[in-house]
Length: 449
Image (cartoon, rainbow, N blue to C red; front, top):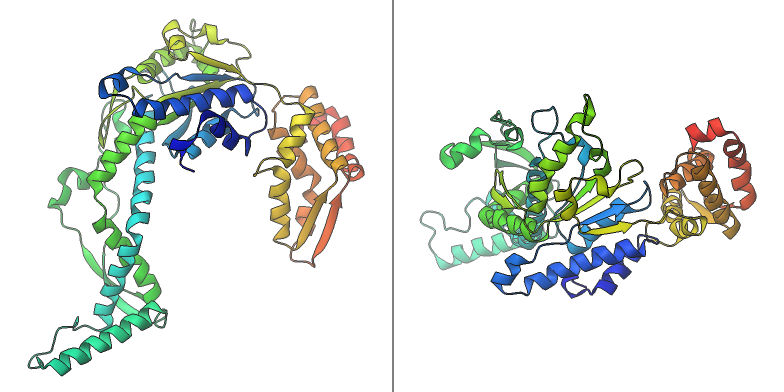
């Protein structure tokens, strides 16, 4: 089903396939996504006035903040980028320029549109590539030889070409070696460096001079199968309107782009004094124009950020959202408290989602002919241990399940390689025997789990 037809309830149902719990967060992002569709239905004048309601997700690590944003972007086929706010610093300090977020998002969007366009023209490109291969195998290209303008000669050449085309399509010549003319791949040219922010513009001499520098061709000897792939790529490049790619990519960033600002709490807090804290408030002030709407210069032209959706996230253990500068607070009107995960939710995470950990490990071992069967008692024991270790040490949420599952299955993953087919049952006793000593030893659990 197309995302345009999904109601907020259906969006939440799609997110439920991968994410356990966090109903409030799912509801907020579902409304934000549906509002984008609603905005597109408005008149031009009203559409400009409607701005996205940016969201702050507040919760400890491993509760699903990043996963919600990532799955939302996948669902909407929107350009999506995850950045850590702590990687950016105030202008004048060593660090990345905040405008690079939008430049990177534009690069991602270009890649998405390029792939979509390639899929559309791939059939035609394959046909054209086969015709070029036919011209190599049958160089007359169907034209009559000198003095051979008789109808029977023309007809015979046409029949020969048709037979060759049929054999080529059926894969009879795949290993035959041919010489083809291909565009020579040149080394990347030196980038043009300038003031802060220009280092990522990616401008090079080829782009500056455009088609005034002719592309070199070279001959390459390869098999028909490899030649078809190379020629199909060349034909795709010719068939795709690159200006249309840039236009569509820019439109998609401006109207449906999603930026996930992780660790936003790391740039909130005391700004007085020396050291790394000095630029915290400065980073917020630099992020502010991007979030409230500005024009960012990229190598594909100017990109407006007025309608880009920003989802910020942070644990906010020390600082609180109220400690953000007031202007930035106002740009994140929706705040969602994420729930800490309990043992019951760990059980669901292990079994319910389509990418559940138990399903992942079972699929990995099935490639070796080993079938894993987890009893209900084993799953409950894993969830209980994950909760216990999270309470006793750092609470890293669902990520604790990865460390426990890896430790639990370590011997099986190491030993069961290329052997005979068998079924291994994971029981509560096995889980307790394997992990009990580590859980009881606080030092061991801190470093192993």
